[in-house]
Length: 86
Image (cartoon, rainbow, N blue to C red; front, side, top):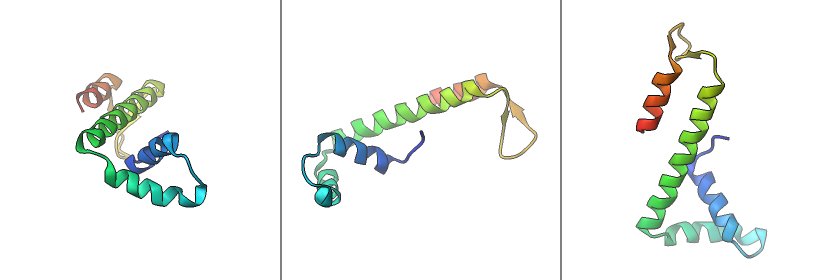
């Protein structure tokens, strides 16, 4: 399921959060502000790897791929190559 990075961070915060639901958003904001540079990069790399995996899985499910509503079809192998290079 595609989601944005903020949603991903909210999931990571929720995994370690102990407290009431009422305070969770405030605690999330503090948690994000307190993340170190290396931690943020690590979360970002993990998030990108998950998104790439989800995209490649979707590509495998397709018979053909239509680009931007055009009648241009591209090979799955080309899409996979581009995604893996990201």
